[in-house]
Length: 501
Image 1 (tube, rainbow, N blue to C red):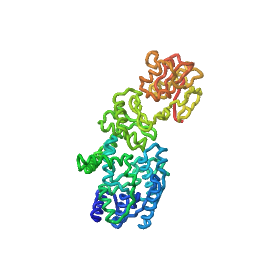
Image 2 (cartoon, rainbow, N blue to C red):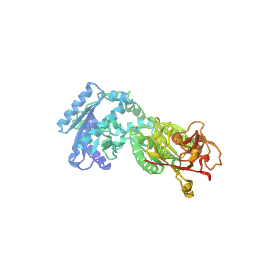
Image 3 (tube, one colour):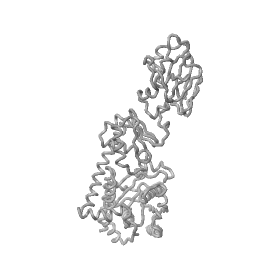
Image 4 (tube, one colour):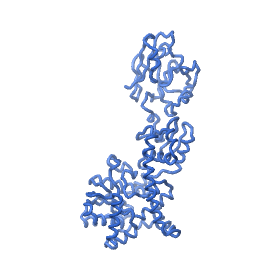
């Protein structure tokens, strides 16, 4: 029995590329049957792969004296096998309360973060944990009951990057090594080995693992699945465990294909991306199939919230419907304080409380509500930006027609006498009206003009207006006022141009 199980696990490792020659593997060892079986099997495989093994144990401080006994047991095992050992004691209950997480989720994050730090310290290439086939069944069923997509139904993978586990960056002294896509590979060599096989192996090898009696506590959701729901499902189909394991395999292949398509679609729809916000091209996104619409939204949320594991289906569906049918300015709430806002040609996903000016593109926007007096002639820096406004006076015969026709949108030639000696830049105010050039003197509310020009709602209050004697003479970047245009009777020309400092 021992040899056959070792052979089965070896073949599983080879099939899934879990082990390579000269690997240094950090093993998460709790002292229970799963991790003790894994340790024993990998020790057996040491000569085959020329492995270096390091043991890591987390004392979660959740079981009182039993937690201390577990730690002492693992220390004894490491000493007997002459393997290096790293131990960390963590008050999981306190941290879970602080983070507003369940005990299970907090323990998971802290455990993997510790394993990652140990792997970084000893320069290991792999981290091995003892998840087995029955764990996989419970994981798939748990995700199904809570609501999930393909990624949830695929369960756990035999091989994954630690960076994909959505851990909390604050649990690492430096996030750079954990966020690298090839940082550390997490392997699960027992993923197709049943709990019954593991227990039989421990008995045959005369291993005496510790028993965690909290696994019998049905107040934990996973334990209720294990002890109540799955036995009940077996009365309907005795092969339910095999069916759920098979489902996980099928969904893993489907999810891998979808991820490849999402990566391709992302290059098409992405308009801009930063650590604070993501802007997506509206027309390109609307042309995607529904599956990719949902998946690109999930990808955007997970990019901004890397520690987030589960995204509610209702959040995504609400967002999809809003983007398809909503009007400009419509908003949809997303997980962990994110907000989706619809604009004319794009939609933006960003924190709900992000300052509006942090979403602005790098253009000459006015980031202060106060009026800014201009230096005429001279240079006026725009506060808190990399832009300035340069002003010079010209004679009419110094301005050629082609200069007027080819002027940049952030450049204007105005009648200096109409502008007067004390113009200012300021943001729009309620009731602002001007006569856009080319409309024959027709007057229009500045706000309506901005809407017609499809200036995103979040940007409108930052567009600088050139104002003199209470009159808006230039909606900067868009249109001067008809009254300030050059005429045959113009005696002096004021040339204004925004430029980088």
